[in-house]
Length: 167
Image (spheres, rainbow, N blue to C red):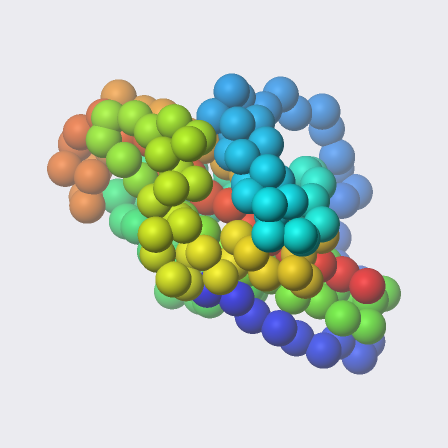
């Protein structure tokens, strides 16, 4: 799912940009980035770089889905995914802003090659991965021994990738 917004001027918002901290990425997260960039390169597209802001948005959503037992682009409160991402990946100061998101969950686990393959075999997810607009990505993978709701209290791995561009 992707959203494009032409932005005029928005009021400044306190964001994760102001609270940047170092983060260690998991083997799964790094593998997804490497395989995604290899896929993009094979389609003559530029590679994308990790964004702390987009990763913070992705991790926030992944944790919320795991703890509350839902799986959706919309946030737990029903708001659209782009509104959640906008809180972290602020459009103010840019003339163009756009975001997209891919999600997956697997029980009990998934590796990066399988994640990329699952997304590639879905037209909407594939479109996001190969969208030439994207410049940055946030990747969050969370493995839990038991997740409620749609996960049936099973061991699961939930992955969120948030794509973005600001210019």
